[in-house]
Amino acid sequence: MGWIGDTVDSIKSIQIRQLLTQAVSLGGYLFLHMSKDPIRAGEIVVFNVDGREIPIVHRVIKVHERQDTGEVEVLTKGDNNYGDDRLLYAQGQLWLQRHHIMGRAVGFLPYVGWVTIIMTEKPIIKYILIGALGLLVITSKD
Amino acid sequence: MHSFGYRANALLTFSVTILALMCAMASLSDNLNSPSPTSQIQILNINWFQKQPHGNDEVSLTMNITADLQSLFTWNTKQVFVFVAAEYETPKNSLNQVSLWDAIIPTKEHANFWIQTANKYRFVDQGSNLRGKEFNLTLHWHVMPKTGKMFADKIVMSGYRLPEEYR
Image (cartoon, rainbow over all chains, first blue to last red):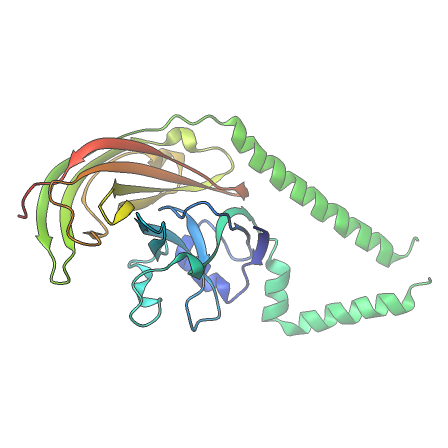
């Protein structure tokens, strides 16, 4: 169990825009938490699809939990998308299982991720910042 | 200790700390709100009810959904996501939750609503267990804050039952 802070950077923001255009604006910082609690409809989960490196943050719309094993099959969908995520899953995959899911979104801080976004979009700013910091270190009196 | 660099750093650290503190207080203020939402769902018609070629039962139904979710909104509320799910048990699955309809409620004024609609998402079983099946309809809401913790709850309405025969 652990807290993972996940910055919404420019690439991830595409998925975020699909999910929650009005809710999680660009530059927001999403708090994720993974617990042993069963996955239920309505929860916003972060998952990886085999073969894709960028995780997707979408809502669970269907849950089927087995009597015998307790294992669960879920279907997700971005709130603002027309269709569910089956097009995003791997070829032939209809459901997500627990091992695909990295965490649940539990909270949100707006604007905090902007620093990362600016530095990714305009690398020159990153160099200026590092240069200025380096200069500060060199010129400081002690 | 009085250089521009040190002072700028101190100022920046202080501002970020204050910002985080304000976000935390805004989020905590949501706990002072005690919401009292209400809802009713009526099934008006079973449009059709078939076993699909892949072997799974599927049903299409028209519902009348009324809800008053105004008490969920605080000044820290960005929007409320609401959805209706059918919940039932089968021999193979201890729990099945199938979302039938959802909507985003942007403001308090939109939160007292009435809608008549067919299910937005397909009500498909894993298997062929739906004939005569008793199920609950639950209205879930997820409150997305402007900042801080999201919270969610639901109203469970029981007593619904699918037809004994396909139609």
